[in-house]
Length: 107
Image (cartoon, rainbow, N blue to C red; front, side, top):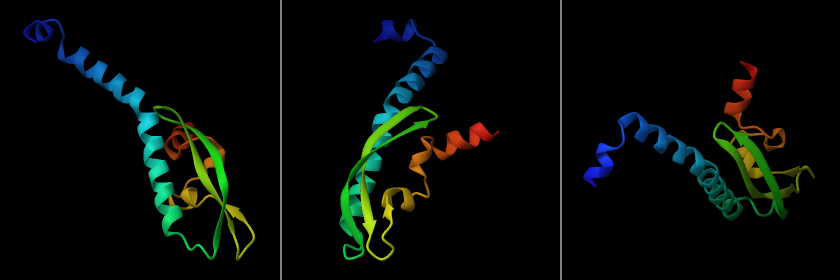
């Protein structure tokens, strides 16, 4: 262990750690979103929102592309088809970009 410490600088360690975190981000973000979507599906108003199927979601984040399948519902009151996950998170998944990426693009 002592040999490893003497061959790496703090700057190199920080850069390596940051790259590893960047590489993990898309998978972790997808897992979190799937978990949120599962909770929403279980607690939704089942009389109002009919679970139609799952649809793919792919969007660019500041740390890479995130891909997952999310639930697609029909609102029985309005007849519209919606992604409740998107509504809960105030997110338009059809744009293909996270809100942070959208803000950066505007700047």
